[in-house]
Image 1 (cartoon, one colour):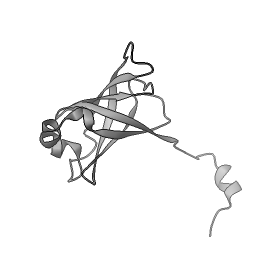
Image 2: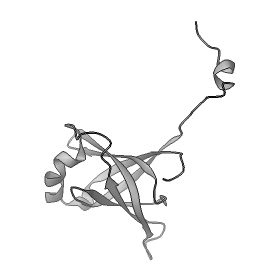
Image 3: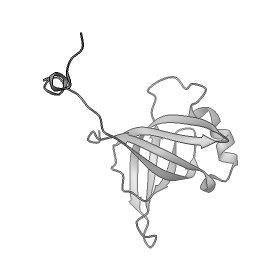
Image 4: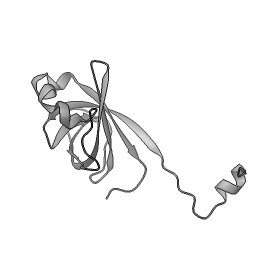
Length: 122
């Protein structure tokens, strides 16, 4: 039995999540988090996923924004500190597993995507 769209939308327990992708530049990375730059302001406390493509391989980590500061004189640029969250054990695609490799590369040349949902910051 399948519900009609009207039944689903009319349900009292309907939950939805709005996600957004924001392109960012990785400025620095460590085992506990990283510093990124964005042309969008991101709220402290926002939780999301940081995805980084490295040589055709995608790495991902759940993160929380712990600091956001506008870069003066750089137009609409924000410097954002994110911490890696321990929502699960680091798998093979975890950014934590490749931090050493990433730290040896010129971090400023790496771009990533920050994906977050529309919930209020924690």
